[in-house]
Length: 428
Image (tube, rainbow, N blue to C red; front, side):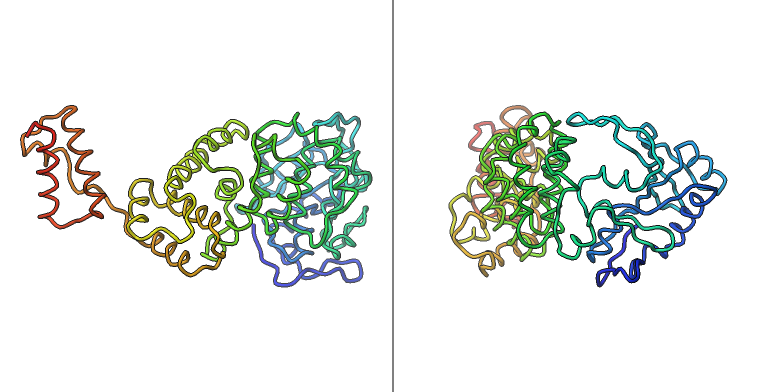
């Protein structure tokens, strides 16, 4: 479920206006199934926040006084599909006409201990709201559009400010991942300086980050890297010493900032993997280290490794690589790695992010056809080269000569190169 709000939704006489998600027939059907007979359900969190900020609404989550078994029973009666996606935490996913709504029973903290909280189901929307992290995330709205704010979230929405609910030190001690979430939410939704109390608490309690799983740290960092003010938050985190342990090395926020500007200038969408490369990858070993420190997927590690390999011959360039160099990198490493490397090389150069020569190099590399080796073992067998090590050597010699001559495709030149490679093996 996704929408784009052209202008921020508004609070008028206590009602949320301009939020089209509230008029969605599927949401109304789900709310109708959960509301009534002593129970109440509201939309909570991100959908309300994003509507008021004029941001895209991706998912609509609900909170309810109904217990999980009641949610399932009411869904069955309303002919909605119920999936127990997190029933141990009170979460049931209801599916209406192919759209999923995550519904969670209200909760109250009984005891908190660093990363986990012992909770019990509750019936108090206020208590549930005040156990959340940020003021802008505790807002809720009912089926009639009435907005409920228990922690000053509306004022912070208006100021585009991210603050913890209550005492920032207490909120962070409940889950140290909230340190990373603070920087991510600031980068995504805030304008102006960081809340000083929040920043102080994050720095004071930064030691708690070492107890988090690498997967959780990776998830937050990758989300942060695609936010609109990622470079500012990353720079602040670097200054506060929050990233060195997670990355097992010194981050480079200046390179990240320039790479993101270059990517945008070349029409690329925000890209967490490219951002991570700009922040922390210079050589292949950096990519291997990040795989271990952040538990990256095989695909992400492979992309970082390929970009590092492609970048090797382009380190230190001021002017962009010429077309021949670009073709060779494209052939040896593939288009994704070549484009990643070009963005990184441009970010390392002294040229501006909008430099025309670098822009043309990117356009050429993006549109250039990928080349394939124009010969096979059969071409060498026809000249008497037998399968085995000699065949491999002949193919390799042909390839290097073909690349050195800038990938000729004319038949006469290819035959000439085949002959030369076969002769050199001494087996033809």
